[in-house]
Amino acid sequence: MGAKYSRISRVLVNQSAAPEVFNPELPIDDPEVLREKQQSVTTAEKRSVCKLDYQPDSVNTDGVVNDVIYTLPLHLARKQNRSELDLWGGGNPYQLAIDTADCSFWFYELKFKNVTDVSERPDGQVDFKESEWSEDSKHIDRKVIPPGDSAAVKEDGWACYGDTGSVHVRRWEDDHDLKFQARTWDCTNNTFAQTFNWLFFPRILADYANDTVATQASDGNLGMAVPGWRAPWKKVKFWNRVTFWDILRNGQEHVETPMQATVRLLYPDDDREAVAAENVQSFLYHGKGSPCGMLMNGTMLLPNYSPPLYIFPHTDAPTEFHFWTLQFLSMTLLEPVQDVPHLDHETVDPTQWVAKRIAIKLGEPSGSEPDSAREETSPGLRVILDSCSASTVLPKGVLRAIWTNWFEQPLQSFPAETNNAACLWHNDPSKFARHDIIFEFMDSRGTVFDLRCSAQDFLTSPWMAKGEDTRSAQFQSGDDDHPHWILGMNFFWTTLLKLNGTHRGSRPVPGTAHPYVQFAPQRIVRDGQLVGTAWDLGLHKYLAPRHLAEVHDQPEIHTDE
Image 1 (cartoon, helix red, strand yellow):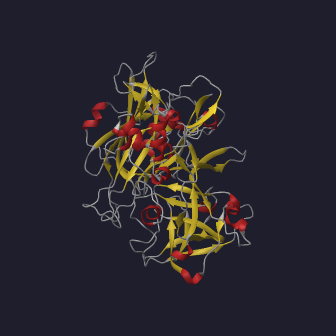
Image 2 (image 1 turned 180 degrees about the vertical axis):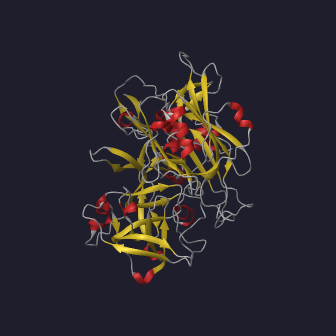
Image 3 (image 1 turned 90 degrees about the horizontal axis):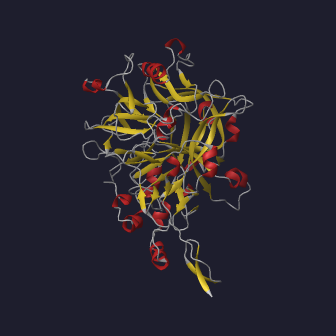
């Protein structure tokens, strides 16, 4: 009798002699050594990659999706002795929106009410009007959580968002915690599984919400802004768990790096998803190095991360960090020169690329600018990196330059404004398939960094605009006094973002802690050639990053240096 190794556990199984099949993905040829390594993968390592989903967030009158929201699915422990089992999700996951521009997390409360005209008075008190839900309101689609004992409510407050959304939230004492499970990547079995025993969430519920929030396709919010920002809560101690960072740091479960996370959002594409491997996913990773890569000729090719780029303190509270913010200086579209067969993606050689630079500034840009414009003083604009914003929000002048210089449309046809904002579109779904784009940033220490990515996903959404061959571009304009400029979801489609709080105390303190971000294009470029796209970047299989760094002799797999 011969033997073979079955599946990933590599257990010997007796069967008829058969030729041994070589698996090039196996990091170790010896099955016993591989099994020994797999057994040393820690529980924290198995918990460190959470799978993200996306939900259709806006549907037009023809039933066509034209917006999505990315969510972390959570399964709630079922209370078998309750009669309201269907109120606890009915076995379906709660979908919490992944929001890097807000710190709060909350779920909807059973029978939550509608509010309008929410406004804050100078003394900090909030005025609002309670209203009836409309007959066709989407709030009925939201999954809810029953409230706890009202006497156990510790604090309440308002969370107000940049899209005019508002919710009133209440938080309960710890003995009213909610137990959830999240699906995480079990690399030893190459599948997603419930590797958390339980995640203990404090009961924080929204008992009031306005239409802007309640019609969105999530069952609550999971804020991923800078750890330590804990609005709207004011009566909290260091050990209280009022943000997701707190849950990972102070809760009963552990991940590898509770104060650092990598966010990866894949472009919504049903066709590509249908043929993609299970390990090619949007994810949230709490660990060192890179959880994903592309295996080629025995080498793990990794996304190329930038050096740390240190974020700015909050404009209105310079002793605190709130948002993941950088100074955005310019964008340069690199248009391939016609008939160049093998483009070099590490050069801006004018024999291969035509560079069309747009400075990021208020007022009207003068048009596409030459490289010499870099020598001029251009302070740029402060931008928030916002995974929950459906659009990138930039000044009208910048959008007009995109419209005329990149989309090659006459200025007279610049889209009309709706609600004081213009939205862009173009005529060719594959118009930018071979283009690159360079984002020029400056951090709080004055370091300037050029991030080069594929341009297609940033400039082209999956959704039609004005006909079958048109595509919306996920941009919105703002007046020069707009409160926040944003790089939104379409920026995340091009780039993995690593977010690091750096501190271990209650909050980061400027001058002591130095929160930073790192970028990595969602593609693989080697020797100037594009060898892999976002859909080739899969979560590591068989072993955790720590082991793969050793096996492949590639320390960068599990280091942030």
